[in-house]
Length: 440
Ligand SMILES: Cc1cc2nc3c(=O)[nH]c(=O)nc-3n(C[C@H](O)[C@H](O)[C@H](O)COP(=O)(O)O)c2cc1C
Image (cartoon, rainbow, N blue to C red):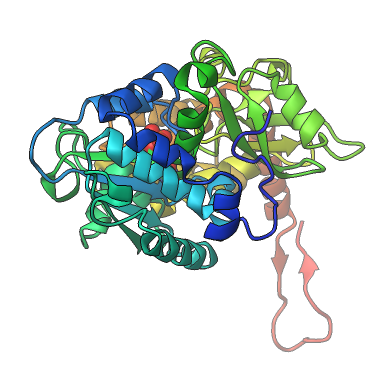
């Protein structure tokens, strides 16, 4: 079942001409013929949950926006910084008008007049495509004063970020958009009440907003008939890592995870087995091969102790050690921590140090208990969930692969002790051709 990716590779789809020929902007026309409340009610009926990470219901978020005569903002989160996630890039590159149409409909539902797309700086190509599409939409009267003869006026500005993971976090993003250093804000107040320039702000992910025209076209209830009761519709999944056919796939929520990893992405390479997988980006607690038959939806992933997150499935096969992957994850978050709150700043850096101790043969199994305890102290204690985003996967690796990590500790210690025994001592400058010899 394809909705977002239906004929996504059609040549020229990024242009207004082809998009309109395919029925583009008809959903906007339909929405403008309804009242904002009716549009919101369709979004509520659709049950669509945010596709950027947290999985919060989009309709409910819009309903939190206050009514009245004030500047309200909509910000599309196109930062796409979660490792393993690359679905928004394909959507923006191939069908930018789908996103623009979704933003315009959502702005109408929330009675919002100022909208932004915050795109990560590295997506220069996609930003250029979006800029061209925004200009086309403006010229055609879809963006601007009293669009298509309605009472709804709306502006749309594309803003490029400068390459920081924290600017994908919604409040860090808002600070960055305001021209400040991208640091997360204390919540509450949540952005729906006090967001951009202190005004009520709706923030949604690219995929969430790009789905809106389809919900209006199909009707909210029809959309909700897809997927499961609490994870409605389809979802784009980015599959990467040790699979034969990595890429973006559109799936109906609730299909077995195995169907995605083996059926669509081709499974691991011959001679290898899956050791573990991240079901929702590198911040999701890892699942093992025993979890492959779980339905891929928000609640099943949560019940299994992980999360669907951004829908980025990263597969790790038996050619990698847990330590190697844990180190990559911890280093990423330590580097990206903004440093504003202590548990995240210290916790991510100490985790890297503890993993380095294992590699250096200086750790004992007790260090694993300390590492697990550090992760527990991070979770739920940070300003935003960047710290948790490291603590959750690292904690799950220590818990699920303790035996392997203990064996790594032992092996590294033996390696170092052996090397010390065989320490190479140069015998001095006088006899340079004799070379060093081992001292026992
Ligand atoms: C550290 C961090 C990074 C995030 N990065 C992104 C991102 O790149 N893109 C995104 O859509 N959401 C990201 N989020 C989630 C956003 O804060 C927010 O929940 C989301 O944009 C809301 O949109 P949605 O409801 O449509 O998912 C991130 C969250 C955190 C804590």
